[in-house]
Length: 86
Image 1 (cartoon, helix red, strand yellow):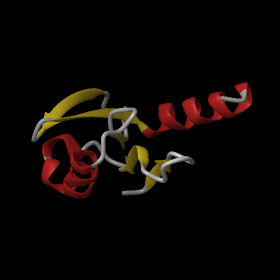
Image 2 (tube, one colour; image 1 turned 90 degrees about the vertical axis):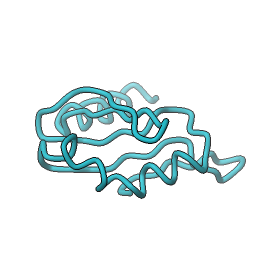
Image 3 (cartoon, helix red, strand yellow; image 1 turned 90 degrees about the horizontal axis):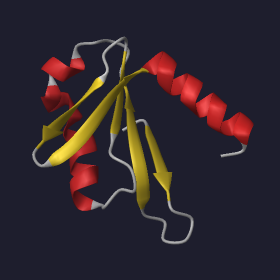
Image 4 (tube, helix red, strand yellow; image 1 turned 120 degrees about the vertical axis):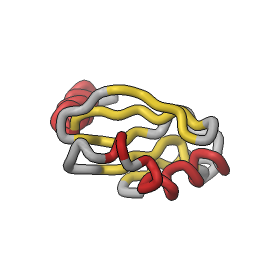
């Protein structure tokens, strides 16, 4: 797990991000074991995110829905949210 946001009040995970720099991960879902375990143990406010090089999509692993997004788009989204104060 590369990024975990905690709820300030409860100190429980709100969302989690796994940073990958390739498009291999949708074909190697076993590498997401830590992300899956965290999401299974903690009700997250947002579905877990895995960044990829170019792949966009969603899949369900063991009952947990996981979103895939290109890392460049995720960086843009984070920067846009910071500039808007969100």
